[in-house]
Amino acid sequence: MKNYFRFEERNTNYRKETLAGVTTFLAMAYILFVNPQILGDAGMDMGAVFGATAIAAAIGTAIMGLWGKYPIALAPGMGLNAFFAYTVVLGMGIDWEIALFGVFASGIIFIIITLFKIREVIINAIPAEMKYASASGIGLFIAFVGLQNAEIVVPDESTYVALGNMTSPTTLLAIFGLVVTVIFVVLGFRGGIFYGMALTAVAGIVTGLVEMPSAIVDSIPSLAPTFGAAFTGLAEVEWTTGLIMQLLVVILTFLFVDFFDTAGTLYAVANQAGFVKNNRLPNAGRALLSDASATSVGAVLGTSTTTAFVESTSGVAAGGRTGFTSLVTAALFLLSLFFSPLLAVVTEAVTAAALIVVGVMMSSALRLIEWDKIDVALPAFLTVVAMPLTYSIANGIALGFMFYPITKLLKGEGKNVHPIMYGLFFIFVGYIFFL
Image (tube, rainbow, N blue to C red):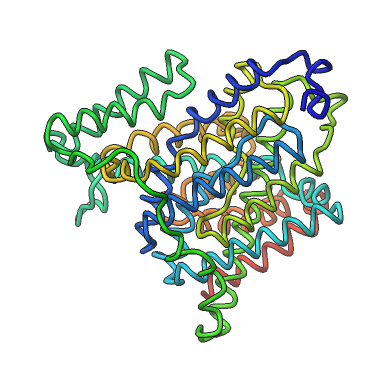
């Protein structure tokens, strides 16, 4: 094992790698409870999603560790799960089973473009500003969902949204959760979001706002409600032109967000670990294939896109340098399968802080956009603001990618726009105006 992961070359040992694996797990364990709640809003069985989340994370992380040999953990990604539930299922009216097929298809396409080395062409085709805007917009969307769940932001007939009743017990519990989570994160606790959720759940139980769980440990929840659902309903669907076009946009969005999220996370973790040499990542192809494979496997199990988590940097900071770190994290995800009864205490008020804080972290890319250049700022702004305001990640990407070629043509820089961007322009025009 030491030789396989090259412990001596990377100046590490079993103790360092194990500690790093535990640290990474604690930093991202919140997804075990947040993901079932989000996908539960789409009508999926929360117990089955909990199991699918844990198993998909374990399989994806193990593949990354054994084959990619990176200290990177994977799990169903934030943003992509929100897009799945609130945009695709609730917004477009697409059945969650068909949405799972869209996730599966995006994973297969990801595998193909990685095997044929098309990924570099796509990465270079999308302007950096639009990548930053997409990531930031998703962050704002997730934070908006968190504020809604906390009932800090509520519907209003006159102004569409308004400040909620800040003296409501559940809202006060959510605010308490936000405060303690921020304290943990600011003070540098690597599992700060998870600890914040745990403390909020305890406070909820003590105050009677959250029911005491019937048990802490139980048998593994059945995957029957979601396993293979991505394929079982395909024959029964009435495949209209509109549905096919919608599904195409869904697959493109899943692929786009997963592709760049993975590439960015991979580079960030590898750079922190000191693996980047001359701006090149060793084993980058294997790492991307590991991520793509995990997406397809997760869809079969019954969860939204499984992708690399930037929280893996916490494990690297704790000393993780090899794929053994990922194996430890994967083992902990498998162990977590026995803790499904805790889903009962993780209410919307408990998870609200996690959504808000993760949203803030994702929105940090806003600083990288050149706001003084209107030809860049306008499409970037539309991408960012349309996601929360139209309650759709796809709408934000569509509007931004429609206006980018237009502003560049008006600026006289149309020849600098990649042909792929012009192709996406026509796809998203069809999506916005005809769907």
